[in-house]
Image 1 (cartoon, rainbow, N blue to C red):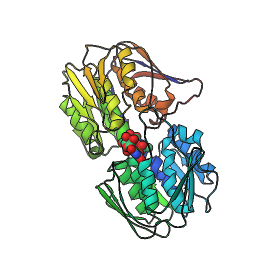
Image 2: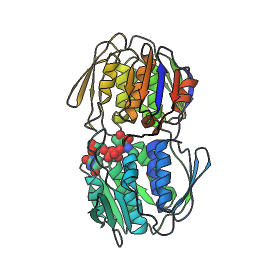
Image 3: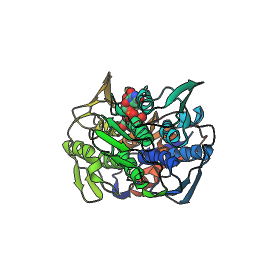
Image 4: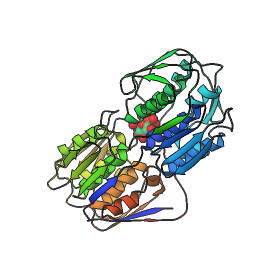
Amino acid sequence: MNKIVVSGGRQLRGRVRVSGAKNASLAVLCAAMMASGEVVLENVPTISDILVLADILRGLGARVEWLERGLMSITPPTQAGGEGATYPEVKKLRASSLLLGPLLARYGRARVALPGGCNIGIRPMDLHFKGLVGLGADLSLEHGCIGAESSGLKGARIYLDFPSVGATENIMMAACLAKGQTVIENVAKEPELVDLANFLNSMGARVRGAGTDVIKVEGADGLSGGRYSIIPDRIEAGTFMVAAAASRGEVTVENVIPFHLQPVTAKLREAGIGVVEQEDKILVSGSLPYQNIDIKTMPYPGFPTDMQSPMMAMLCTVPGLSLITENIFENRFQVVNELKRMGANIKVEGRVAVIEGVPEIQGAQVRATDLRAGAALIVAGLLANGETEISNAELIYRGYEDLVDKLSGLGASIRGEGGEDTVDADWS
Ligand code: UD1
């Protein structure tokens, strides 16, 4: 099992460059299966989630190659190949369920294992299914797999009961090759979804309204290949901002879209941390004292659930009571027990965590329970007194490219230690 070991007490200083967005890349790789020719993607992060998905696409008959670091070429097969995404694959990567819409639309059938339970919540797929059925798909449950078939999808009006990112993406992708117009209401507005829509349009799709509450798609006969550059990862950027603030350091986070980080920027400023936005970089400077704050996670443009755990780690030593309300995933406070092992004072009541700032936290042996919990434990390790050893660190490598090297470059005392490769299921 991989470990990351952090010694606390060093202020982070310098510049760090953010990689391409994990969640945008995952969706775009799935959408690339709808292309009639080669798709070349720039700014794809080398993280284990992407490597797993690339293998799944190869299993489906696509040619997937890294042309150089960050540059990936995908050529889908002309006919559906392979058995679909099986349970061991979907278990490693929930985002592989995003293949359902593209495979169905392109090849008329798709088969994806149904994700089981999950570390950060129940995460059903009812909204994905409702949308695809609305477009005319026949769905069946066969031995734990969802089979989807259609002899021709037809545009429809679909209302989502909740603005689910994955459901919006799956339905939007399928609608690109459906006959006629699809209107999807109450959709997610996350920047990664807008990036996906831009990618689809660059291949000849006709998607309008991505980033608003209603998306309209005019179905096309086919989508071409092409070249596209993925947006920077706002959650990776936010993690560096919080890490800089927690260490009381001064860091310039480069290759960002500051607008995507506004909820994080606003909360850091409210806590008394200096944040200066420039065109494609953000300067964070921490100097005491910090103020306690309240955070509620919400769909974009609200505060992102993926930033909630790193922020909680930072708040552990901020005097006074801070409240975090988790409105997206019901089981995203597992990091609390690990932070408590480090001396944090946190109480959880249902969806609310109450953090009472303590003067200091201490390094300890802790375990990453999900990707963002892992990032939070690194933030805690940076501000803790002594050494923090984080086990199950594979989960962190799922979503952060070169995290240990990037933090070392900022002056952190941090190292990765190898071990048996035993990735736990986690689908954030
Ligand atoms: C995506 C992101 C994840 C992020 C999350 C919320 C990817 C690969 N992952 O996950 O990093 O934390 O958005 O911003 O992009 N729900 C239903 N029925 C459905 C689908 C979802 O009830 O059919 C519920 C979920 O249980 C959850 C909420 O909707 O409570 C949000 O989930 P969703 O927006 O779908 O998140 P993901 O797409 O899984």
